Image 1 (spheres, helix red, strand yellow):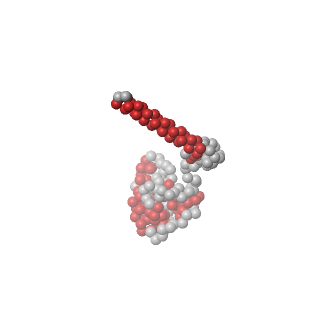
Image 2 (cartoon, rainbow, N blue to C red):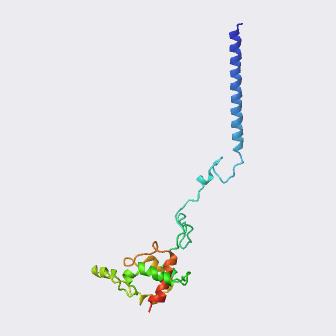
Image 3 (cartoon, rainbow, N blue to C red):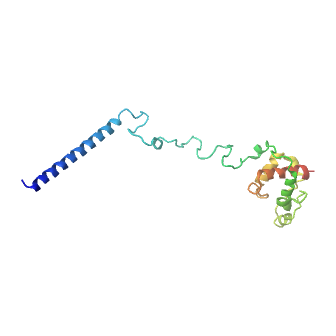
Length: 190
């Protein structure tokens, strides 16, 4: 026998051994996987191996269930925003900031006096334009606040009266709006 023939036999036998080892490894792996799919999986899932059960059994929104994407009515926001009160809910509010009538007077002079006048009698400079466009005149605050409690006045300052009075919710902080209410109670109401 020549050297080439011996080398060919060894190489062919080595390849055969590698194939047998590979097939044995694959067979054992499949046997273990199939054995693992037996009674180990809980009976609640319908799939033998359920890697992502939350995708198959999610909490879906269906008819008759509450909307899970939006917060329930009256929930306190966690994003730092303000609670959006209705007029009836605002009627029960009390001023959490006291002794700020001076701050309220400054804010009233800057944001309110141009329509309601410096004394709140409804004779501000913007009243000329309101009359020119046949719009109702600005409210006389010397008479109007007596019908409202502090919470209702706060709601009006916060939300405005569409289309006549603008909302000051995004312009003034809650503390500044309560200061305006306190100023109205102490200095404008007669």
